[in-house]
Amino acid sequence: MLEVMEKMPESMYDFKPVNTVWNFKELANHIAYGITWWQDNYILKTETEWNPPAIAHTKAETISRLEDAYESLKKAMGSIPITDEIMIGFFSTCNHITHHRGQMVSYLRCNNVTAPEYNF
Image 1: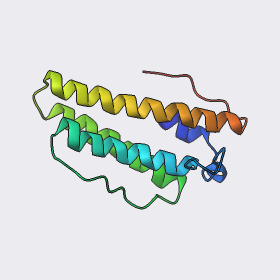
Image 2: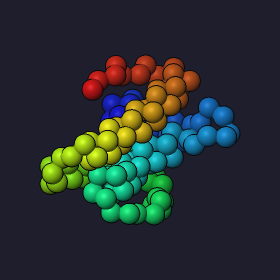
Image 3: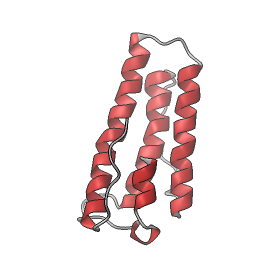
Image 4: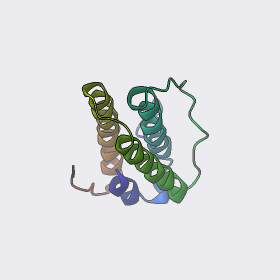
């Protein structure tokens, strides 16, 4: 994800392929917040309402939010006993990220930006 976000020029962070979808920056912010929300609700079992923060304004701020979300998820997974239910929450979080990463790759391609290889 971080490589995908780095690849998109900051001047294109407001790009969206059609009017009915989020722009690249909005999608990136959704992913970062989604990690936190899924973590709270499905890993830490802390019921949290969907209440995303305001969209980060710059590429650097957006990437920083994603880095912070990943670090928080890493800490959460290391701080609790791992059960089947927790693993389902973790894999669901990863699935959400992957789903939206695919959308972001399409945004890159619409702008003739070569997408990074998928690493996992």
